[in-house]
Amino acid sequence: MQNVVASPSVRAKARRMSIDLHVLADRLGRTQLTMDDLNPQETVEQPVQNYRQYWDIDHQQFGSVEAVKTSKFDRVAAANLTAANAVIPQVTHHDEVDVSHVERLRAQFKQEASVRGVKLNTLPFFVKALAVALKKYPKFNASLSADGTTLYLKDAVHIGIAVDTEFGLMVPVIRHADQKGLWQLAAEIVDLATRAKARKLGPDEMGGASMTITNLGGIGGTAFSPIVNPPEVAILGITRMQQRPVWNGESFVATPMVPLDLSYDHRVINGALAARFLSEYARSLADLRLLMV
Image 1 (cartoon, helix red, strand yellow):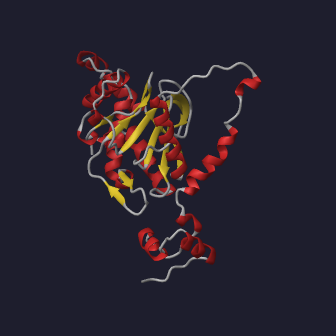
Image 2 (cartoon, rainbow, N blue to C red):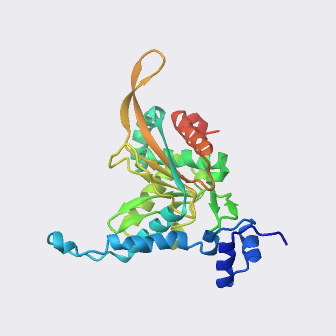
Image 3 (tube, rainbow, N blue to C red):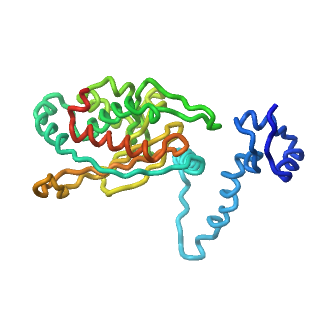
């Protein structure tokens, strides 16, 4: 049995709480223990309890108000987002991608898309590129156990698509996205989004995503920091395409550029890996031949 390194105050509190420090050290996989290890939830929950005083006020003293009860859907989503933001040390890496090739291919396939009855927007390309990137960078296609001691690396590639509905944000999942072509992805995205807005998704069409894409391109914005959706370890945000002057070596050329925002769990992914991942992702969209390799 290894010796446990702990201060006298930690040992005293452990005795009061009837906690065996050796058992705790074995469970955590280390020998040095602090006060936070005795009450792991206290570091997350106690500050929340203390801060509630700032919300618990009489708003009517400042003017008339209307009290509207939040829906159960909103409360569940709020609890999940609060937990994710409190527990996960999140970092957001920003980049942008030249989508000239994507736009040319969309224009080339415009007539075929009409015949197929499929809307070929940029999202299927983003999904396909992400599926390819997840195969190249398996650490992004992973989940960390609740206690942080085990990383589960996944073989299947499932991409979540955040859909804005009147009931709140829903995330249907495209299964095995790496095995599907652009036409199939485009059709599935429309189908899932339509049924999400009508609340007609089955339970097997939600959850279990490798990673989620949240696309604000149709609304606007130049950048944002999406919150990682556990048990995923990263999420990709996309905002509106803009024509910007880009130097091609001889002159500035108007180029369609799309901002990318990658938030990730820093316990699993470091900054250098995130930068390489997003750079590779952008490179494959800028040269679509890389998606075929």
